[in-house]
Amino acid sequence: MMIVVTGSVRIRTEHREAAVRAALAMADATRREAGCRAYRFSADLADPALFYVHEEWESAEALAQHFATPHLAEFNRQIPAFLAAPPEITRFEVSAAGPLA
Picture (cartoon, rainbow, N blue to C red):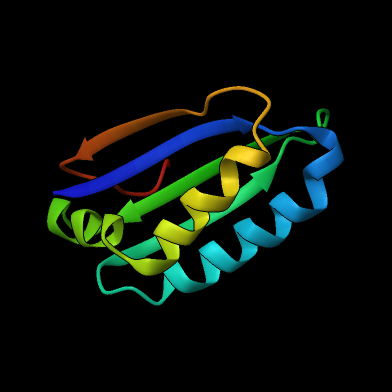
């Protein structure tokens, strides 16, 4: 069963560049983890203070190992200074996936 994590994060605009740097470093380190199928941040086209996160994990165990990494601990240390509101994150357990068409 694949795990998908998606959500949104509203940041303080005065910290946008620092938040982007932290997100890029986090994504780069996370993509090298065993069991990570996808990990990305993106910005809303109409609202530069709104970021989205999308993660895909091969298993719940891979996601649990991610939670124990030093780069996640560092990201969690940095990110509160950037937040304008609490993140809204949802975890999905996916039993099947395929092309839309």
